[in-house]
Image (cartoon, rainbow over all chains, first blue to last red; front, side, top):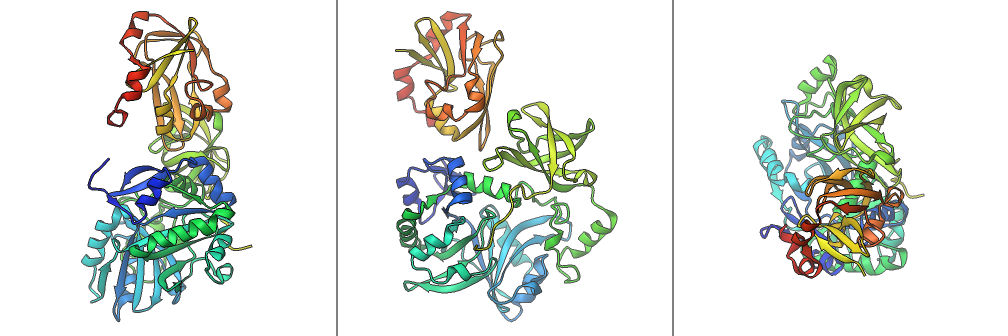
Length: 369
Length: 125
């Protein structure tokens, strides 16, 4: 294990719980607990799970032109959210690639927070600084904040038991700055699982107590700690992109089937090239396939064939605990992205039948019922 | 009581009353995490020591399983097709992959004893 890897504020908690720790993006993170990935995954779909996601990066953008700066750098239409709103967006490059995907949190138009991928913190930080032609004040607070996520249909039971107020009424993709027992934190109705859930962003010094309180309050509700392994299968079932797999410096926002995040006519960096791409038509687009259980699961870089000819490549693949079959994100020839289209995919060197689907593989349930 | 011998690549071959079974070690199973799929060899197939003999998929990864000695497959454990998780719960018992006939029994002496395997620093491999 890499001796230089950073321990999150909750490292000792994971070790006490018996987690298998791995180095991920320079952080020592739990990949699974003794519960195991499949049961952890199902706990989030059927009950509730808690995640340490303190490796994620937090940037703050401040100044009279903060809003303008963020709209310039990010492809989504920032006018769609207001103060207290959260938006999924991407740093698109003028060359048609993606620097990272991220969430932006508008405290007010002059103060915006970004949560970025751990693996891209250094690159993103360089990118926002290089593009700061707006005189904004940039702060990389990634090492100061922890992020604890509570996800699953029983999320409110746990949060209410831990003393969080009114959580059942909170709307997805919003956040509040609250004081919980005197501790200031960002209470965000966000997640990466497709389930109802909250993410709590808090200064490192308060994270262990917050975690302990959630674990104690959540125990009667079956709160299960979830590692990065199940986080990956949950986001895959939910059809959510992962940078380094579906997204990269050489995939465009449109190719990633994320046109719903494109704020046309906002003038963001990269809009011109995406407009040209849209007019000319795409050569490939992100879709999904499913493979029957008896064949195993498609894995990243597996080739896809349609009518015997090369037709695409898998970007992420795993067995789906909910569907009980193999699922995968893949780049496909656009004409193939048709629900039910039969193709073939290489699994362990053999071509096996696969069915094209439009992700998500498992429907989102973000609202409190 | 079966005698277990291990390969450096974490397969075992167990000998019990003249019957040999091959599988992956409890250590390997716990390192892989939840096992979701096992591809087994066909009865009658012959493998040399170190050949890919089976494939095991966990949620996170696909791993090859190598023949610990030269062998011929007598019977594959069909129960793993429906219940691959048995490898996690009982790797050295019900989670066996195949009953085999070692075709070069002298190679058995070159494997790692159970005592030495338990003491081995496996993280380094």
